[in-house]
Length: 81
Image (cartoon, rainbow, N blue to C red; front, side, top):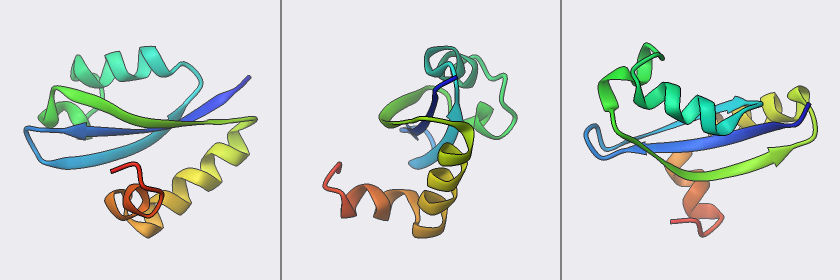
């Protein structure tokens, strides 16, 4: 199964969120329906960027790397913002 690391942004909270999942469309939909506890307060969430990964291990490592760097800084470093 292929995994995706995704970054969302909430205009409401002015915050970014990073996560990983196999089914990106369903996961973003879940975030916007309030099914995820942390992100329920920031609805609506917009998909900013996603990174395809070949397996869950790779996705977990990338997610951790993004969180350590800071999501906004990570995006700025790669000229996505």
